[in-house]
Length: 250
Image (cartoon, rainbow, N blue to C red; front, side, top):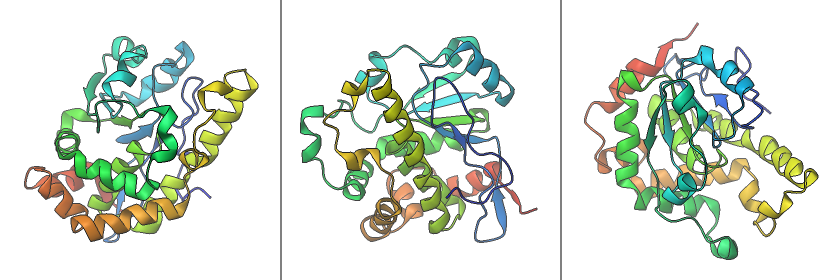
């Protein structure tokens, strides 16, 4: 079930199935995440002219792209970059794509997420430095499907802003029906080979996965704030993020 919010969270597009606003979530100290500041999404290179018209009022300033160099290389640039002069910030967690023949060798998703964080302090530092700059906004954080890499960055951001874990988990689970519907569409249109052999777990977004990751953030990294500090995120980033992204509830 979609978390309670004041408006439609998902923005329906022809060339993206998982573009949504992370605004409207309450924090534990009585604030609310501002709408129309940060969006999370799957890859955005398939956007149509109609999509560009839909997105134009959002005035997106920056794409924070978490995909690998190979993923970026093998897709066309997002039309947003040229059509709407949107900046592209490439922040990959790893350099090479995962070998699709070895997907069954990947660890369970919470452990995989923690490993990405552990191996990517420069990426974390770059992302959160971007997010402390007013000029970055409105921003879209995205990877290929908008679930795993995007999910962990969104979770760390919401944790840093003071959103409770149950809400963070509920936001993560929203991806699953959108992704499964996209997979069904691939199969219906004869493109099912793109997902054949992919571990089913990799196409799901159950609450237990994000809860397990958040537990590992606390156990292995001492919490989100300590994780950012250890990654070299500038002192004062938390206060700046709260200034840029929160407003009083109501």
